[in-house]
Length: 199
Image (cartoon, rainbow, N blue to C red; front, top):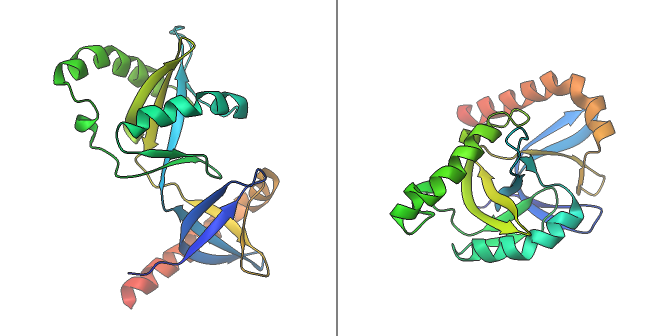
């Protein structure tokens, strides 16, 4: 089944190919709700301070430094890590959680402590719940512990269309301006979904 796709581009020139899930209009301006074709991932950093929550790595220099190692550990699972717009993504089939580690004893022993720490911290980190993420890999860089996680929920991206039908990322200021219109956005999406079912 053919799907309509659009390519987002960020200020750094990185791109992200997305499926167009819905089109809508807000303030007489066309917008699209996009879903990345490849699987989004987040890298979390955790340290030895039990009082500190793990945080998503957002610093570009840090991502640049750890990217080769993260890419290498994911390649062991036939996943290709990519520097894409909006979010890091991987291509390839995501493994089942129970299949990430080959040695069952390792999973039950060495990884238990790691998982326990991540569960405790992610449950309190900015509303993030570890149950909303799937652990793909973990690694150390300069004695810093990292984990690569895939969100279990879809990552939808709202983008504005220009006169040529090309999508553009919404700035924080534009999103703040549109926030009061979110109920109207939800209504339009519900109408489109119901129309699909009616057809």
